[in-house]
Length: 292
Image (cartoon, one colour):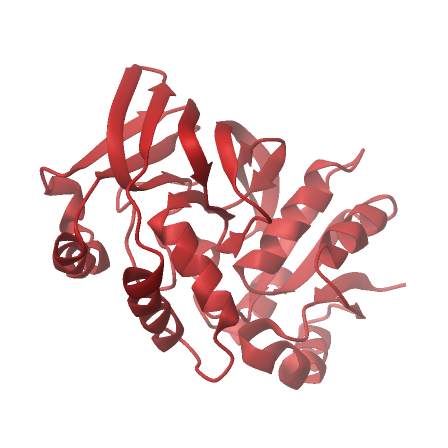
């Protein structure tokens, strides 16, 4: 029996389905016999990884950040956590960037064959695990809008979603944020608890974040008008927004966020069903092995 290869066929607007055979062949050329399993629904990657963990020390995941998030949840809930090999096929591949992979699925296959592992941190939000980060507020609405876009690829998806969110779903709720060093009370545009540096493939939301330092970068953008958000977006692309007076960055192991109104939330770019009045977020240092 080969190494389980969990493939999301709709990742990257169908790249998972298109490249599946080529990935299996590339892995085979590098000496890895991979047994492909295609996800069929939301949550399926989590179940497949959890099942595979009982008999395999390594599981390969081919998909985007959402697929990886499911895989991390499957691995973290398994009695014996497998090492995760990542073949990036998504629109953003934000966590893969932290491993130096980005969109290069061929290089990812070579790395999987090399088998070198490293320990990385895993975040947890209200009992769900995440690899890259949690977004609350504006960016969660952007993630939800991006999921509805079917006719674009790449970064254009996120820029269209950004425009729709500004036009239709703009809000600045008041929140209380408790962290290791104290508390914040603000109206906010967004709050990000970042393990990795990027959101949406191009946005450097937490430019100093590391995936193995045992900390999250808590990025808080205070309540801004639409024009203020438009001015901030180019700075987020460059990562210079962290010097803006409207943005506060805190390094923490834990954060508790509470609001009087329900908050939209995403984990690794995937919008959570419903909304939340309170969130408990923490980081588990070195909790998972990835092949990198």
